Image (tube, rainbow, N blue to C red):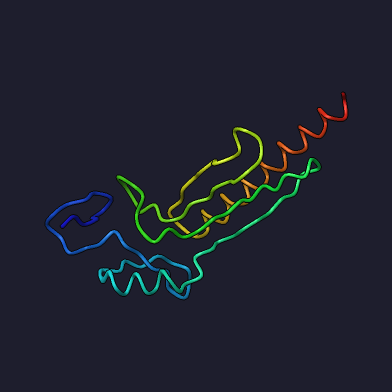
Length: 129
């Protein structure tokens, strides 16, 4: 059995790479797979979700969620992810991961700002035509 310890996976410890969020939105290790699965099915894991409809009638969605298990290979657990769905190439399927809820909120805001900047630039180009 592999376990996550200080950013490294080993066979010698009962520590887990599964996490749940406490009432303060802080990740807490969860060694019980059944407990984790029940929590994961019922918890609100969304940090933020934003939909932006462009002038050319395309909906771009920015979603930031708590993943529930460590996606990192070293260092602190990487447990949150922002993704962009839709929009022009370079935006669609953009992905960035974070260690804390507050980092995820800030990352979501940056992703939304990037989407809006790309939309504004495209609209300026369309106006010059």
